[in-house]
Image (tube, rainbow, N blue to C red; front, side):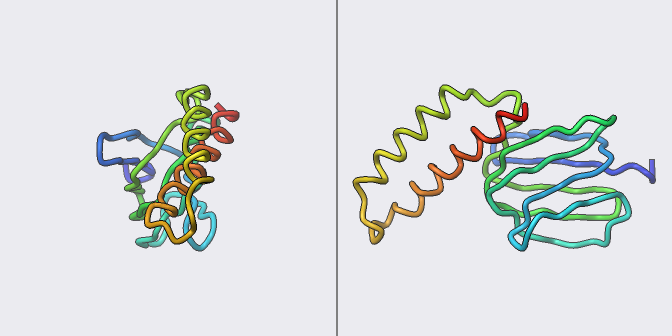
Length: 135
């Protein structure tokens, strides 16, 4: 229907979510963006952060990594490397990954070519733990 707002969250491995929603909130690199149907078309970059949508009066949360979003008046397509829904995040596994990444990071110099990558792993784990609390 023309009055619907469709959200698609896509990672390289799968379509994480596809459905009709009332509103979407995405972590843009320039700040959080709230999107309702009829939004002006825009292509924007997404930063590591919390994405959420409202459907039937219930808000659902995702931890997302960097990527892009195409916003059209009746469709939002989010393309990110990682998108994990709050209620399916395995907190014990994420804690383990965070500890391993933090240990590796503590042994690196900032000049190390993998420093930024490992730092992002720690940040993503922290984000996932925060978002999991909302699930």
